Image (cartoon, rainbow, N blue to C red; front, side, top):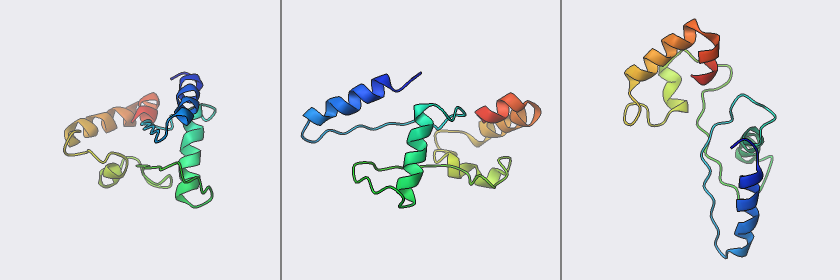
Length: 108
């Protein structure tokens, strides 16, 4: 989604539903002005108890920011399907590309 219009429309239309449920899967991306990043910030705030929104259940999978992204032992933190759906060898290849190309690093 390029912007929040569809998300906002769906979220507000759920008010008419008695037990509306929205499931949103994404990553925060690298654009800190994008609404996905704002949702990521909200998710972190709820997880840390800074936001007590009982209608928002965040699940965040990520490697700690201070960690080395090249450390294979941490990859499962950001990729819970690693080793089942996602193959470790594919991840290793992606990592090697990212080490050589800064633009690939953001994708990795």
